[in-house]
Image (tube, rainbow, N blue to C red; front, side, top):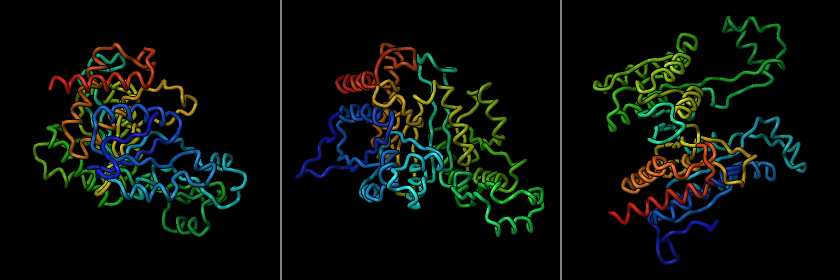
Length: 391
């Protein structure tokens, strides 16, 4: 696949600098599909490709090299494919033998990206398009706002549990006493860290989004009856933020209950907002309602930067086969265009995707068809061209 280079030349400064991180597995396949669509759009942009993913962990001990971070700092926005991520103990086994024992520790590159650039808001639209044979129900239009930097994905974990921390917990929390006789090396602890500032920011973002797009409800997904302190903080903030948006109804749902109600009455929900883990869970469920992860785009949004990516993973066994559905990646391009203020181009992309799905002539294997990743991308690109000629 030829590298992207639209209008920018040595003497022509492009309007945008866009970082391209294909990643690994099917990430490279769907990024090739995105390139086809971006070429057809003729966006005035310069594209800089960077290194991220499993091969760089294995060969360098860092799945997100410093050179990539430096490159991202020079760009306006980032488009990413998909990356392989594994538990640290498995990652150590695949590290180049020359690097083993060197103190390298595997850490998810996408989580690190979110924290390095404070990409506090993860937006995951889940919309059913007419004609999709995998739709659970027509008319579903749900957007999940997931807090991206805290919660159970904060990365503050211990194993074994340090003796001094265990002693402190035993002294200050009575529920810890049932673990008093358990050896420290048999205890693993993950901390669910939530701050008032981050809760307020994700909730305000969700309500603002609902107001601008005329959604009638914002539903907070939590478990405050069990996770009383962290969940309680989120709900208290939600009630305060909701006072500024009287036209929008605040709903409070437990994570387990909302999963059931989404299956039963998906049309009753519009904007959902949750902490990191719960947002991850509920957005996958919502994606399945509209046909699966092949239709689920996302944006990681911060105050000054954003990374757009499909929700799906890297599926390494399918790498290079071009079987994956690229629509989640293409819809992530649409979200990127909206972020850049290119609303007309964003509408062109979504309409092209909707038209291709409605016609049903081109379908990837997950949709019951035999079209390749690139055939689907070309079909969308052709629709964009047709729209341009009509305009």
